[in-house]
Length: 582
Image 1 (cartoon, one colour):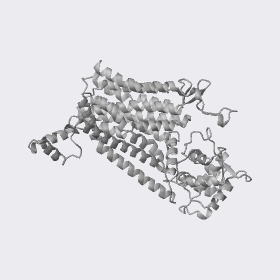
Image 2 (tube, rainbow, N blue to C red):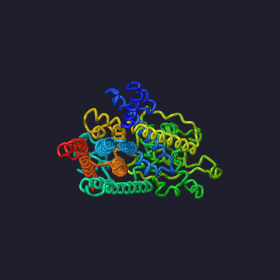
Image 3 (cartoon, rainbow, N blue to C red):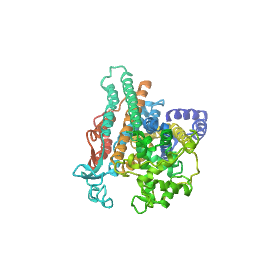
Image 4 (cartoon, rainbow, N blue to C red):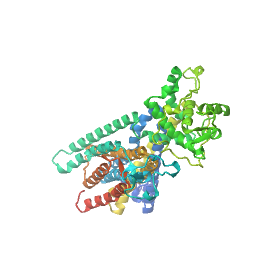
């Protein structure tokens, strides 16, 4: 922290005979970071930009690494259920941790509280509003989201969001399901840690470490329960992992990291032996887990199919089929493609195939094990499973990702799927390792500089951290991710976007708050942040109440939640200054 560097600088000045330049030169031998007390205001601003940029890049690396791990079938549920929640909160957690490690921790702890409050309130307001705005559709009959095309209405004339309802406060919004209500209840329960720690102000006769220890226990139980719930939901295919996995797969194919067979590695491994034994692809695919895989593949294949379905009739001819296979990074001879194409046609007299036929033939193509690991190469055969027997899409291909017409997939060298997985894991671990290293190196200096800015502006470092720390830890990325996911305009995507924000708030309530109360217990720090606690809890209760027992969220409700962010800022200031709640 800056305190020990300042003490070291004073010692260096004494050794250097009182010369500040000589002292700074001597100090440079001990710390790679400049001593802030000697920096001018422009230099402090520059350093804050450098440190903030480093933390932002670290956050991006963690996100990219975790998305790559989602593509590795055996560990995808573990990554989605456990790693993603923890990695998303890691930047904030380290800032909170370093705020209480210096020799004058009580003076720098407001930075950690500001990080916690700013991150939690921001996550539940601005990205939430962005998801509602990006995913809004018109409401039919007053309260029914326009997700399905009415009978008798043509595809070309139907829009999920009508022009008249585009900015209607009550005529547009999103549909949500009951899982958000469960998340809201968990979010309210994990506020218990804030309540317990506030009891230190009411019962001052109780020994100092009792309430921090109880709050730490509540945070640990809450975090463990959250990870258990996330892990179970992802294992059952009910969590938001499916939406993130679809995005990651499409991006990996476009960037040339994976081929179609690489994406389908989990489906092939699960069903190949059964297919060989039964000689029937359809039976091996007719189970819940495989059907979920097929639905996910439909979402992955849809943007590539649509890109070459130039006339929009939901059919492609052989030349368009060849281009789609090329975009999927599969290097297949023309003769083999012709045989696959002919087998896929339900109507042999036709010269094109529809989307369901396309998905079926791609599944059959990718299900053929290209290696001899199972020792069944001689038994390989072609399968032509009927797509309608196992392909049941909710709402057709709505919600599929759009590919930019100008985007060209990277040139891909043919690599075995197992080698693709090995490369993905190597790249993922490299990104995660470098991201964590950047966080560890720059989190401490960032805490110092936020405290220094507060000192020079003569305001509490809490306000500086409240406003600036979320920007360094990925606030813009959260807003972009929430709006991008909700913009598919399906009930499931909107629910997944809001559920991710709820989960992030619960992690803050448990992991980040747990670190704060652990610092209080270990270092004997005092909790003097009643105003901040009230603001965090009230915002969480208000957001939770907006989804409990509700099936929709109107644009009006989205704007109300947006307004909670500036209201919370003003409320904290008034409570601290007017009512002395500090």
